[in-house]
Image (cartoon, rainbow, N blue to C red):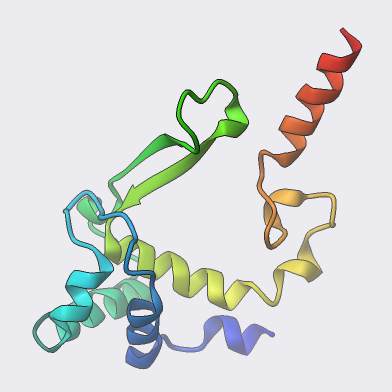
Length: 142
């Protein structure tokens, strides 16, 4: 599985992530969405790919690209419990693409590394699942 992890990143891999990304994704701190890069691919695509490929060859990411804001979005009006919120991270598209490349390469390996009880690393589970379960159980006993 090592060759899959260390294979050079390709322009097709980057383009696939951009064009398969949801159109309704939240914009990054720079205000640009995946839709912007899809619409301007002929103009911005090469520069974006060069920046991402540069990261994977040098390991350097500009400070502005790493800027992220995390906020909680209520799932329903008048949310009153932690499970009524979902976290959203407003990252720059540059950062999201790099994260997605790494995640795509790791997804087949993760089940071999982590125990099933580590729910934060299991597909379709949330890291908060165990915390919510523990709070519910303790609430029943107090």
